[in-house]
Length: 106
Image (cartoon, rainbow, N blue to C red; front, side, top):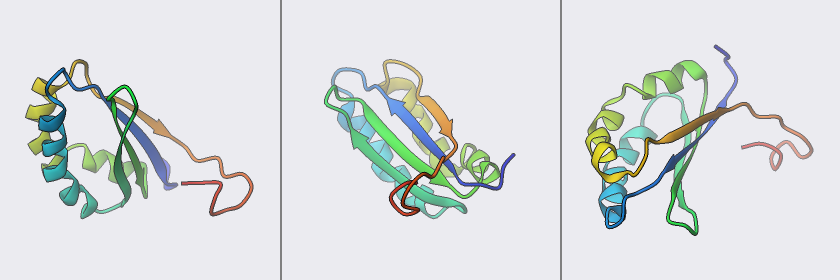
């Protein structure tokens, strides 16, 4: 595991009519995640097709791994099981800063 920051994308595909249920679960969970050790960024976005995209940044892989078993994730998991058309697609990314150090990395 690396001590470098880790950027994560997570794609949520809500079932028809389940968008608001999914967003409510995220509204409840996100403040707790923001308070977790190592959380630098945890923000949701919406794609034109209705996909909810989470963009995350964690201080380290170890702290990201701890997040996976956090109370906030556990509380939202039942909604993920019933409101999504497919499992959450999660990708861990390593920054490659190029150019301006502020604009060239998350």
